[in-house]
Length: 455
Image (tube, rainbow, N blue to C red; front, side, top):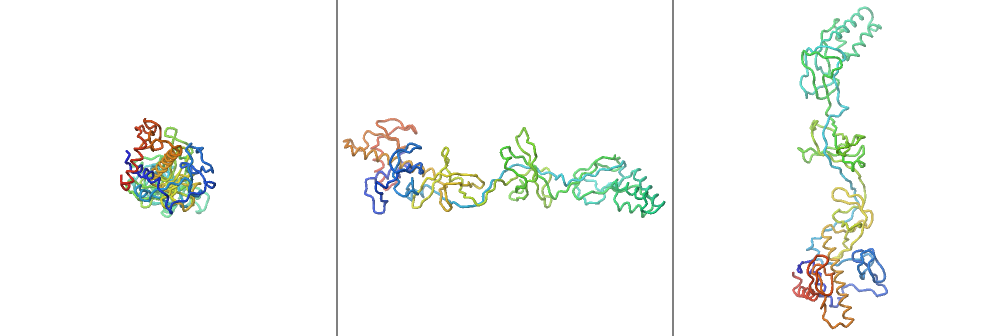
């Protein structure tokens, strides 16, 4: 366990702690200008040493400007071995998609019903299959009705008795109009001068025959629905939205639909209607979407995957969601300062959007670089450097007191948690490992440094 790469690389720092700083190293400011900060809470800055009011850790010298408070310095080689990846803070549009399952249905406002207003018998059927495509005015079937024959005779008698615009003639013609007899069929009766035994019943609109309840020779009564015709050029999709997502869905929002057998093909539509009641059993809200249906590829009854775009924000600061560390009530990111320097920064976030992006409300500026991979290793590195600083402080205090015992003699520490230091053996309160003499730990670090840093 002592030979973990990160731990040994940090203990190598102990081996060189007694060397004189080079001219390229940072110059410590005068004591009167020294600022102190917390390695874990860089927002804590004060002019005197002491303990952090948030976590209780001892404050450490900043050793630089306020902008680099709490920065941790890591060798570029170690950074590369950690696999640290970064991303630039940019302004961009973000949004969320609500994903749910929908069912294709016929648009109710595109459905027509053939319903007779008189009794009769079916003489001949022209459209006899469900699913056939019909055009407006196309003959569906021929019907014989004594009522229709009597109405035709009344019209012909009125025309023989007087002019075509007489009250009697207009009344007889209106009777046929109210029974949905087509005007061109009425004109054909007038031209022929005799009543027709059967009259055609025509399609009221373009579309597909969705339902047929008629057979040749059968009797039909007034008020019976004989055909149901639907236009499938545009369809409805009914979807269920969970209760906690329902407040964000609004009429007019863009929606996309993808079919299971056509992966990658996305159809564009929108939210057309939100039903006013909630399903008490499933705790879902029903939403109706409208889509165009070119080529009638969408069949009623199909299941589809539906995406509803909501909570869209344009031109906001956004960073990859993976860059954010959640620490209790705070959210932290590591900002790359260049040359192996990283600083923890507390941020305030907003919308967590799709494509692994999160809105940043405060704490970062456009153009800054944040760490998206390896943050936990950097965080561990900063804690270990803080622990090493405490060890050095203990050794310095012992030297000033003129203690005659050797460096680290009688003190024990944990190889995995070097901030744990106590007199006498025992177990680490963090991980439960047996504590080792501090002198052995320091000797191991020196030996690691003498071998060129190889584990």
